[in-house]
View 1 (tube, rainbow, N blue to C red):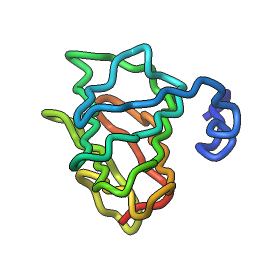
View 2 (cartoon, rainbow, N blue to C red):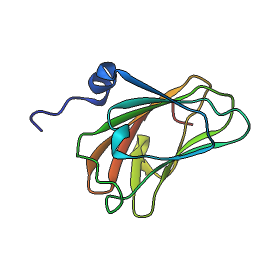
View 3 (tube, rainbow, N blue to C red):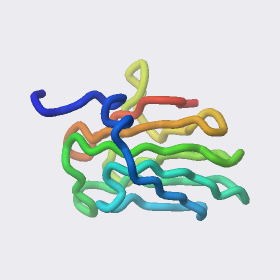
View 4 (cartoon, rainbow, N blue to C red):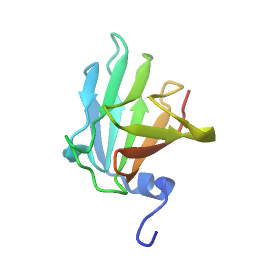
Length: 119
């Protein structure tokens, strides 16, 4: 697809850092192109990717997440959303290690692909 960059190329261009200090977050349009450090350290962290009906990110949007704490950090599918990752799997994505990074890229209606340090 002309004009699209690979996820790794797009990640290198992300300049805006956001520190998330709460246990839950639902992505908003303002999160497009951001690097979100999940630092909440009192329990599990869940970041939800909302359906297009709620927040319609452009195809090609990239968002990156870092598990900056020791807590379980999950990127969760909102209602009707599918996140694809390695070996044909799809579903909620858990970041495997502390300071591990996972990037997601929107590839179509309610469809995202995740790459990185996936558990």
